[in-house]
Length: 393
Image 1 (cartoon, rainbow, N blue to C red):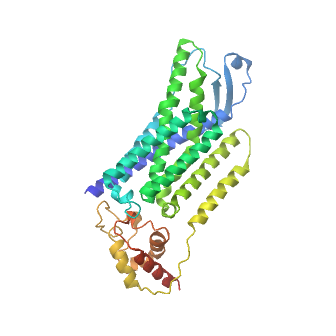
Image 2 (image 1 turned 120 degrees about the vertical axis):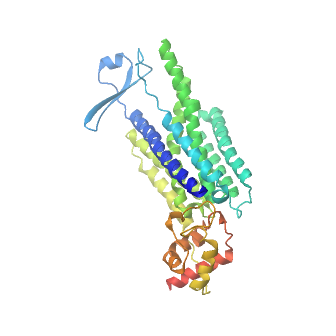
Image 3 (image 1 turned 30 degrees about the vertical axis):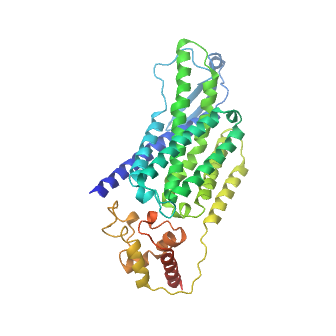
């Protein structure tokens, strides 16, 4: 019953996280696009009342006229829309998923004894520490003298996230390391909204209500953090989907692949932001593709040559002992109410029908058994490799 409840909580939490994430990212991308496409107002009357930029658009069968004031309107409107709950709800639902899957289920998804033999409480404390210290270090870097030069700050932040990625893969399973890296970036993003962007906007509105000129400093800080958030978005989206691609987090070079794909995602976002200004810089995309190509080269399966002959019965004895506790019509592994992805390995026929997946997950990516819960040995992995080769001959 417990596994059934957890599965439903997983489904509902993931669904909510996806919905709110789309709302947050959609609003963020739209406002970055809007801000970068504003033109000087054509009407002198608009300019006289303080409008700094405008944009006309057509969508959904109607025309829209968006205007942005240089400072603030002479009188604030009665209804002023704020954009914050999308960010907060995305983070809260993401934390729910992190707690449910990677902390409550730490022994399955976060701890890998072959990486480091952690107890569940210690793994959770490390996870919490990464989120808290990630934000503290990032915030201090932005507030330091390094934050005055965006290029230098970007280089330092790259070193910082690289160190975090490497460190996490030395203590957690590949999958657990990836999700905590993404959770750290997501926490930084929502903390930027809550602790820098929103306070700056509240101060701006308060000054406008009093008829005072706004202090430009909070706006400049908020702008910097907003830019960081838009560049963190695609790396975080990759992490959210990475659990479907065991080849990435299961690699011995998983930390490097994580950093390279994060860089590629950030550069792709840079390219589109530049396009907003009418600057077409395809070399940015080329560099991103180079990073992806390097990742693909790192992850390319290495041929395993063996003269050993392993028959179906021997291979199934391994799979039955190491894999079928989860991948069965009625899983016996605690925490699983159904076979992951519907993959059944509880008979020789089922195993042979999933031969490619068995080879990919246990031999190539080495991501399975998850967390190596069933303690598969290197000799057994080699036997499964030999069995798969015999099928191809």
